[in-house]
Picture 1: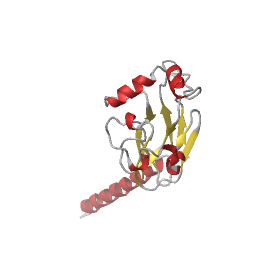
Picture 2: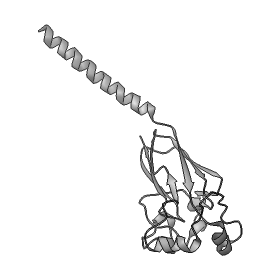
Picture 3: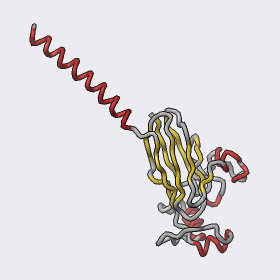
Picture 4: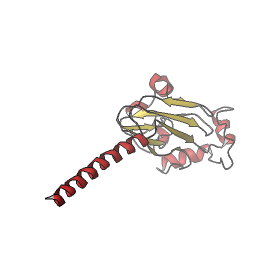
Length: 182
C-alpha cells in the first residue's frame, strides 16, 4: 500500500512539473520578433529604368539587374536573396513584429489570408494575386500603402492575435514569412 502511494505521489509530481514546463515554455516566447527585408537590386539598372534613387543598395554583391529580376520571376525561380529573414517566427499572443528594410528598394509587409502574387503581374510567376495585393491597385490601396517599408526604415505590426499570420511583399510576392502568436 505504501509503495502505491509513493508511485501515485511521483506520478502527480511528474504531471505538475510537466505543466510547469509548458508554462516556462510559454513565458520563454518573445514579445517582439525582429524581421529583416533584404534584396540585391543593382542600382545602375534599377535607377536607369525606375528613376534616380529608386534603388539605394550599397551592399557588396548587390548585382541583380532589373531585367534578371523579371526574367527569374517569369520563370518561377525568384532570387532567394530577396527575402524576409527569418522565414518563420513564434511570439507571445499580443506580441509584435518589427520589420527593417536593409535592402535597396521599397517593400511591403502585408498580412494576407493566403500567400499569392502581388500587384505587379510580371513578378507573380503566373501565380494569382493575393486579394490583399490586388493587381492594378498598388499603393492606391491604403491598406497596402500603410505596410510599405522604405529602404533603411522600420514598420511595426502591433498586438498580433493568437494564431498563424501570413505576411508577404505585394511588390515581390515570393518574399514571405509566417508569424505564429501563442
